[in-house]
Image (cartoon, rainbow, N blue to C red; front, side):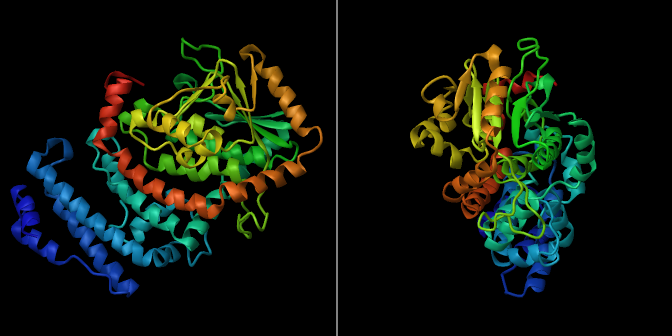
Length: 463
């Protein structure tokens, strides 16, 4: 305690304020309402203490140490509070489970209902214009909260259910698609292609990279492709790009936009909406409000998914492939998971990739940047079929015809059958609980900034 007092005093903080705050550190009493009041008061006092320090990029060493100590102390309190009361917190936020609340809204509702538990939208707005290196990392508290929600058997399953429901916007766009057979959502386009609904991911300026602006269109497009009654199968493909090096070519995806990440223009919730949103829908289908998405009940609405890989599937693009039912790749295409060079976790690839290529190759790909060319023995452990780049359209049409010629009723049943032993819901939620906490810390780590400067030259790139 004396060492903590010295750290705070060296930063020039008020001795009386420090003493009052340290002595008010609450203990769990078991009374939810009482604990919520006490812990909120403690977190708000911590925020007031931190407000007495300069902004992050103007702090000296002593001030930085004091801020770090305050954050660590209040986060330890959040962990204690959530470990004891996450079910009660979630129950209040969802009206005892009667309401389905998506993760991105849940974290903001938590900030209003339990002050200090997660950052308010006003707090995040003050940080939003800053470069990633200058941000305080308030969103780490969103990760801690979601980690506890996902890690609890009841709340985790309920949140998973909420995230697998069709988006509210889908009801607005679906009639347009059903009437015309296509819909353009900007970053995603769905087109009926015979017996298939093709979802085209499009971010042409940035090699079909992903950022906060692409998540919603891709997820709404996913809903539409699955719900289309005129098609039997869905196809995922990258659109044509504008970059001079690849102009006029299709590319699958360059993964997360690293330049925007460096510039602080990608939120922590980007990862959550990717993992729990559209990618999980490709794997598990769409849930219905009145039925659990548990495979034993079999009440999801789903289709088999084909991925057509042109050029490359990097990072998040490679993660997409791990939930597909069939993968057609161009012979010159390759896959990478350069998460180590970025300093983040590659979604659920740590859990899924070993099923395809084994533990050693998976570790080499994730931790040591090994490239997997599609038309190699290792690449074919992921890809089902290889075609010449200039014959991808014809090959895709042939694959769609082959997979739908005898109907797909058994295909849906079989994909559910594969999910049960390979990735049951409890396994996914356990992984997601760890992932969201670790990714939150990775996202705001100084090592991430250094990696982006060293491997991406991010400080000199423009958008």
